[in-house]
Image 1 (cartoon, helix red, strand yellow):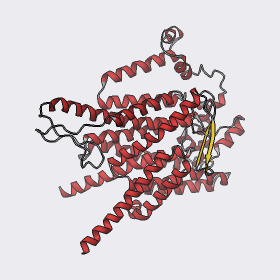
Image 2 (tube, rainbow, N blue to C red):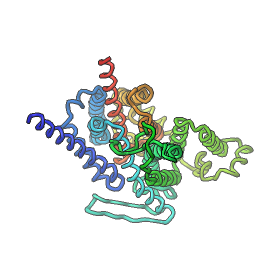
Image 3 (tube, helix red, strand yellow):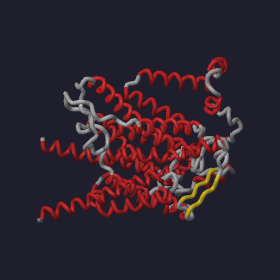
Image 4 (cartoon, helix red, strand yellow):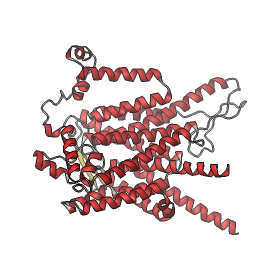
Length: 477
């Protein structure tokens, strides 16, 4: 009787945990269309997870690091010239540290990584389609349902004009979102492609009844297991729908990314393609992408006699954007080099506590007479606004996540080959996020900020779980 009662209690909490994760998936699915609903859902899930797993969360050293960082940020806000703005700026960071800690305890498996990636890819499709309609079909509307629960605004021609922004405030923000989704969708596409190729090869071998059994029955992650025995007929066909949908999603998101006209987005997307090609050992694709990139760079930056040859092939849309011929009269104050130099000078003036969060815009406008929201580099912004100790600790925590993730990918004995690809995709999305924040700042868009921290939480949760497995195995040996 006692055993049955304990089983019921265990099943109850397991179902509650699973339902919390399902709500997070729905939040990710709806986030681009309704930030409010997504935020409330993710917030509730984080609170429930904290209540259920507070001991586990409080024991993790990485969370101690973010707790210390929170204290330093609060101290920095207390020394700010504009304390009100600085304390308001904390809301772009502190709540997301809590979200990170909760979801790193909630997300533990590769099946969850796949589910999360699928939710993000599916949710991106309507936003990408709206963006393409904005640019090519002249779509423009303002739709509100139940106040701000669903509030969609599409500006005609994009923002800035001629650049897709869709439901996001700016084309660069939309490009940052698309880059992350593109990386994950490409990872899922390669996984489906590998699965289909393996199935096709086994199908060829299995003609005449000498194939191998290939089934998804009993798989926790919903993906077919590799065959393990001989002499069984290949009876369960793989549906082509996921592969076809992912093909459409990769192409749609990539086209939308091109027309955001974001040089940073283009560069990171090409970097991701090269990384996947190297990971898969596709040397021909690596050479093709390298030749394409070299042609574009030569058209943009080579001496005129050489560039003229490549400009016969490369559209001006690409090379003129790269070398700024498309925008020849840009003010010096709007150039990233100027912004970075100013942010660095601010950091040197107040190295310990900074000038306070949200102070850069006011200081830059007073100096340059041009309004600018941020210095287009997250790490310089934190150095200038919160001081070097906070910025170095933040970078150190990110480096910790990155290093432990790479170590897990290289050394763990418990990760199947099929699972390594999805983990590599998240790791690549994390690196893409770091690269984005060296030339922009993504935390001012709530959807993008939440997405970034959820990806970090997913990586950290899986890493922690498999490190625990390694420790237990080493103790038993």
